[in-house]
Length: 365
Image 1 (spheres, rainbow, N blue to C red):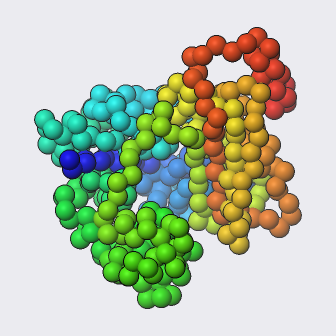
Image 2: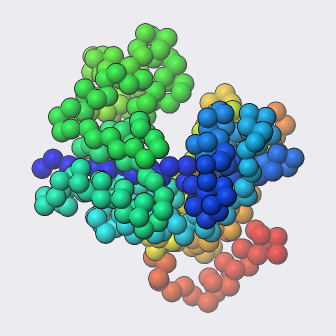
Image 3: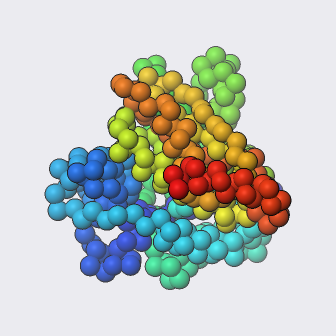
């Protein structure tokens, strides 16, 4: 059976919510994030602000220089999670096989629904329902695999719909830059370009054994994706072993004022995903990549499983703060939670009390 996979990605989500709730912001350059004088960073920029070169993770002081008329709005993460929950409910009306990636994007396996309705009609219906019922726009990519669907969703933003016909996956991918392929990061893409491999099509044409020599154990999966072959399943909450959110920064970050909002935002995204799935986790992990591409993780196990945003954020920051040394800069940060339990399962009074004590300690209460 041919699979039909959708990647749905909300457009400039935080900024779009602010423009929806405050009509005075519509059509204006909105920059959601911290204050420039506090060395805040941009969480999300509206498309009006992006025209001036403003992007997420940019220091707000730099964003203001690029876009002096931009309007700075403080993030409201509770509101964003509320809106995300409404949108995920729309997705669940279509299929129970959903893999939320963050508060503003998800994969949907619509194969079963496509047995009685055109996949394109399903994609159009999702877009129209999000617009009508929530008031936001979502860009959608439709294909036979997750990789192709994700790439497609990004090609015609905002409010895009890109369909990759069955059997034309390799043809669709071939002219795209090699860095667009999942699994090929900036460093790998630069090395490939040094070897005169600039497009996914050129990568796909390389011999099978070359992929193993170049990418090691990841070689076969990168080869298949480059050729439009992708059988990776859409993982539901019960299949996932961890839930995480990570960000690669356009510019390395080193200051507390730059890093703390990122950790808070990622923790909120993870907490929202856990809550929607009815899960709690005991292990909090922070993934770090330095400016020299050294990558490592730090983790700790809590005495009580949680999906509380404040607890996750405080724990993650505690782990990251230990790694902040003079001269150390970060190009990537990620926050994850694993060690799942069912959030509906009762815990003993001793465990609850111990967890509450730890939470107070983490929050400085």
